Image 1 (cartoon, one colour):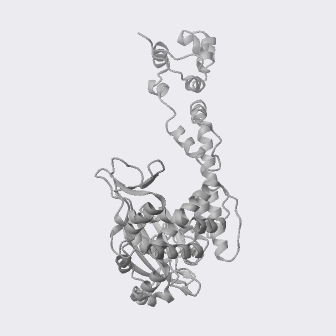
Image 2 (image 1 turned 180 degrees about the horizontal axis):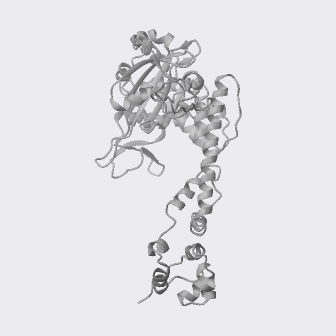
Image 3 (image 1 turned 60 degrees about the vertical axis):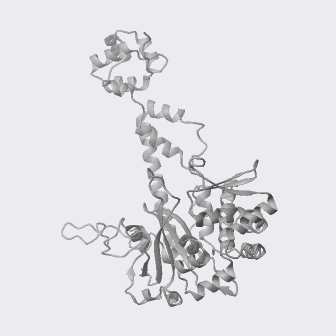
Length: 470
């Protein structure tokens, strides 16, 4: 019977060094030559079953220690080298395996240095945000993923693209959809481009929302999507074709640095164009003003979803025909911010958006219910905020529903222009930016100490917050 062979030279060397033995001494105890032990430690000879048993009996070594893999050390190294700063440095995992196996202490040191780097980068970004709020701009060099570059570019500017609005409005008029926009778009695709739209069951397209097959000239839509999301996927395809010149012109204004960022930016603009096609500007603004920006009523009027109307409300900034300047933030239950946009750019400095006391956090406790608050920031600025959860594609029995929460807001001075204005007479909830930038004392929800104040630890008296500061 063939013997099982294990290459574990670095682990054998660590055992020998831990026992402070020379190669000669260990080789003599194991009944092998020093040269053979040297080859084993350099992974040029395997550890046979007999040698494993000898190591276990002579040095009381756990066999699993010799046969196990790098485990968590390798996983942590993978996390480090997945950072965009190091992207492309390694062709594969083999070198990481070798480092984790041969030098676990070095591996741990690399991980510690990386975590310290990420912590300092996070603190510098917080400090830059604080300085920006006081009118001081600080340019910090940081390696960004293409998605981060796109998000920052879109969040920093008004969520309104005049060329796309005009092109989408003209396209909607030419379609003459009446009450059946989906049918009109499908007919246009077939008539103008010979492209058919078909809905596919989950088992045929389990991981995709939409797929365009160039060979059969068919656009496949997943049945997992709601009718509203299916409509948007079709609208994205139509807008990408019919409004491509307007989308390209707006994309050029961003001057993204990578091809991947340009691709993501093009998709975001196509998504914008789809909303503009589904809810034409003039008609939507008139309805929004007449219905006092009631999101649920607008969704029923245009046969779209709550999430789609919420996004559309941030786009109403046409020169000479502007609506209430809403901003929007979407998060998941873990607190990850998925989308931020604003009619005048997302108000980072004035609103923040990282406070656990915002109703967008509480929305997950009451799925589907509308939460309306008036909130006050530390500088005295007040906002009207409206939050509600929305569900993603239909989940199978064994899957967890993708549920996110959307917050739309505007300055409290404009609250009476909306149906939610009754919240303007409610006591304002004292909120703030992210905890690291917030200096509210006695906050029950504080999760971190502010970077602008030293901790005020006192053995004789402690405050309501676990992070008291001076």
